Each structure stands twice: as C-alpha cells, then as structure tokens.
Image 1: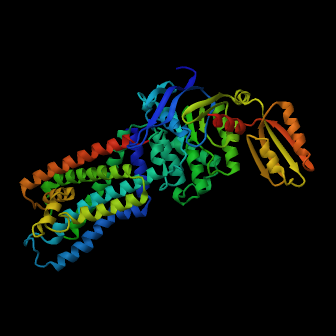
Image 2: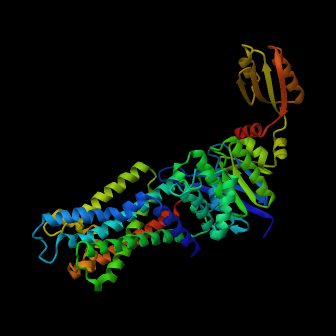
Image 3: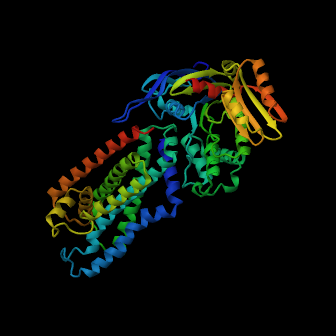
Length: 251
Length: 313
C-alpha cells in the first residue's frame, strides 16, 4: 500500500494547493447546475418532461456526468504535464509497479469524483429541492465511480500517446465539445433529429448519464439502461487495457 | 551478492519504428562497476548513453543481453532494482505544482521514508542546496537553475545504493556545481555508487574513478583516466600566447593538421599527436612567427582522448 498512499498524498497535495484545480474539479460543474440549469428551468415553464420532472432534476445527472468527465480531463492534463517535464519518467523509476502507479491515480480520481458527487447532490437537494430516489443511491455511487474511472483511463491513453502540447489541448477541447453536447447530458434525445440521436446513443457519456439519471430521479427504460450499462463497462475495461498498454510502452 | 553494483552483459537495445530502419542505440555493450565507484559514461550526442541509462533504471527493456543492479536483473526483478536506485534525469524533472519542500517530502514518501525522518532530511538537504529561502514556493515559479537544484537535491533525500545522474550539471552555476561534485565524492566515499553521463569532460576527469566511452552504441574505451591516457599516448596540448597574433598563424596551424585548434584573442590552443621531440620543433617553429609571451605544453586531456577515440570510431 505504500506506493499507492504516496500517490494519493502527491495528488492531494497538487490538487488541494492549486486554486485552478479546485475550481475546475469542484465548482465548474456546479456553476452549470446553478446558472445554466436554473436559467433553462425557468425558461421551460411548464416543464416539457412532465409535471414531476423539471429541468433541474433532469440536468442533475448531466452535471454529475460532466463532473466525472471534467475531473478525468483535468487529471489527464496534469498527467500530460508530468510527462512533458520529465517527472513522469522519474516516477517510473520509483520503487513501485506500473499497476500501482495507475491504481493510485485512478483511486484519487474516484475520491475526487465522489466528493464532487456528494456536493452536487447536496446542493441539488437542499437548494434546488430535487427529489432524489435514496433507495437507488448505491447504484448512483457505483455509476459515478465507474464513470470517473472509465473516463480517467480513456483520457490517460491520450496523455500517454500524444507528444505535443498543442495537439493534446486540441484533442481534449474537441472531446469536451463533442462528447458533452452530442449526448443526453443537456437535453432529452427523443425530439432530436435522427442522425443526432444515433450519434448521441453511441456516445459513452450518454450511457453514463442515462444510468445516473435513472439512479437519481428514476427516469429511463430498463432494457436500454441494461444495454448502456454493459456498453459503459466494456468501454471502461477497454480503456483500462489500452491505458495499461500505453503505460508499459513508456520509456 | 558480488562486489559489483552494476553488471552489464552483451546489452542490446534496438528502436524499431514503423516504416524506418531499426536503430541499435546500444549494441552489445558489456561492463561492470565496483560498489562505491564514481563511474562516468561518456560519448557524443546520440552515442546511446541515455538509452543505456534508461535500460539500467528499468525505463526501457533491453532487446537482448542482461543488466543487473546490486545483483538484481532489470527485466525479471524491476521492483528490486528500483528499490536500489535514484535518478536525476536530463530533463528538469520536478513537481511543478508542489512547493520545494513538498517536492522533497513526496520524493521521500515514494522511497518509503517515515514522515518525521523525511522532514528532518528535507531541512538538511535544503540547507545543503541553498533552497531553504524558497522552501514554500511552488517549483513552477522558480527559475530553471533553481528547479535543477530541487531536482538534484531530491536524490540526496534517500540512501539508495546506486545514484544515476544524466548530465547533472546542466543549468547549474559553477559554485553549486563544485559543491555538488563535492557531495558526490562524499556519497561515493560512504559506499554509494555514482553513475553519471556528461558531455563536460572536465567534470568526468575530476570525478570519475572509472570511465566508459561509447559511440554509436558500442564501447570505444574503458578504464580509469590514466589507462585512457595511455590509449592516447603521443597527444599533446600546446598553448602559445603572442603579444600580437601573427597574420599567417591560422594557415600555419592548418598545415600541421592538429586534432583540434582554437584561436582565442592572442592565444593559440591546439592538440597534436606526435613524438615528443617533434612537439618541441612545432613549438619552436610557431614561436618564430611572432613575439611569444607564454608557452605551455601538456599531455592529453580527457577531451583530447575523447575526440580522438570517438573520431576513430
């Protein structure tokens, strides 16, 4: 456990003493919920999703998905910088296994993800009066853990493969735009054009957000959710396998 | 366990890139290094020094051959190898988002130091490297030279038996460099094995008990400084200072076909390979070209040996 504790200590020191990380990890998704969510909620009165589901409730899962995606993106950026300045290679000579290195990193991401999820749920409940399905909270926690880990592995591949700073920034910016907007994060997919709906249904963010939505407010078709769960677990495992391979290729 | 800190046997590392011819960065190198020695790995750019260092520090797997650190094989026992080593990389590898103190403490944690001992040691190391005044500053806010100090200082946080330094003095001011060379000598006297790569040959000349010169991945020469000087018997360094540089001196020197020559103000510096008596003739003939203020003739320096050996290879 020594090396994993050392990684958690390092990541904690980096994130907790850096205002930019705290803002992007913790508060950026909340601003979306409190500004964008509340704004759209007021504009869409009466709610188009039915009397029991206002936009705040619908968007809560989107914000949780956005947080897991954003935390992974921030971690991968820090990962890329580590590689760029050489400390990553120095760390690979420390007395630890490559698997411990990756495990430590993903554990830290999961911890941050859970903290962010807790804050978002608390604000959703207390401030926006969103009615959560408490009996599904374990499923929600599990989805948040799998989501943060999956996206971390996915982004790690690019942090390990791409050599140029400008290219890495371009890739992450494009990902941010495409993955977030071509998904069920901001809007229900039903009324959208067919090509958009198909694209969104093939997007792992949609799979994660749909599961989060079901486990927070109970919306979703069970058959589709089951398929999406399998899809997301497969995506996370494939990303993990490829990230490990990319890590082994480093040197 | 034997007397050797490092044992390298017919080591080969080939880089294969799609659509390109494979490149042998390390091509059948064998050597061993005594415990507690300061070992210098020298070679021109692209000689294979960094690749060799990466294999020895488990960053790269060899294509064939074997390497052992403190008796542990780098392929089959990488974790045991990592427990024995510290490394200062060529890049300024430091934790940019952490303070100087946290850089040292984190390094200590990764190497299993108890936090109380790590704090005590961090204070000593910061004093030693004169970085105490910015202990709480983040490394990203420091100059390149100060970052390098932090990076090298980290290696002194732990007592791993083998310390690798890749071009450790890059970006260091001469005073710190001298101090670090002193610390390295102390570490070696305490039994720590130091392996360093450098392009600054005076550093190697001053520090190393044992030197390996490689070029294009192959061993070119091996031994202590005296043994290497014997390989280059007959090489002399001549330095002549005139009151005014004679107009024809550049052409006169070129005709002598020196190993290297350099004009600096009124001074001519050249390295030349010949019999001893011929050297005096050359000094005499060049001195006749003008009024000479100073003459110096020395045996070969490590730089001469290096130039001669790597040119031949």
